[in-house]
Image (cartoon, rainbow, N blue to C red; front, side, top):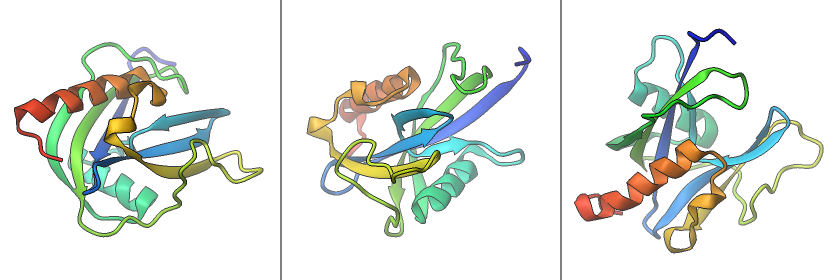
Length: 154
C-alpha cells in the first residue's frame, strides 16, 4: 500500500433509552470483528453526511449527530489494506426506528456467508471495551465514558 494512502472512517456511538449501546458484529475479509456502526467516508462527503449514510445503509435509520467524541491521534494501520486509518467518532441519536438484524449473541452470523453483519444492544453497565476488536474503537469508548462527567447525557 502506498504510504500516502489514507482511509477516513466515521463511527457513531448510539445509546438507547434503556442505556444500551449499539454494536455491529461483522464478518468480512476473512475476519470476524465487533465495532461501532459506521464505515468509510466516500469522496465528496462531509463527516456527518457519511455517518448518516452509513447508518441508513446498515440500519435503515435516520440519525443525527449529537457531539464529537474522539478522533484518532496516533498512527493506525488498517488490518485490511495497510492504509493509514483516521477515524472520527460521534455520539448519535436515531430519529427513526432502527431496522436491521439483531441478536443477543456475539458473531451470530448466517451460515455460509463470507460477508455478514448483525447488531447487538449491549447494556452499558455490562459492556467491556475488550469486546471491541480494534484499539481505535476501545480508545473512543474510553473517551465516551469519560464524557459522562462533562455533560454528555445518556
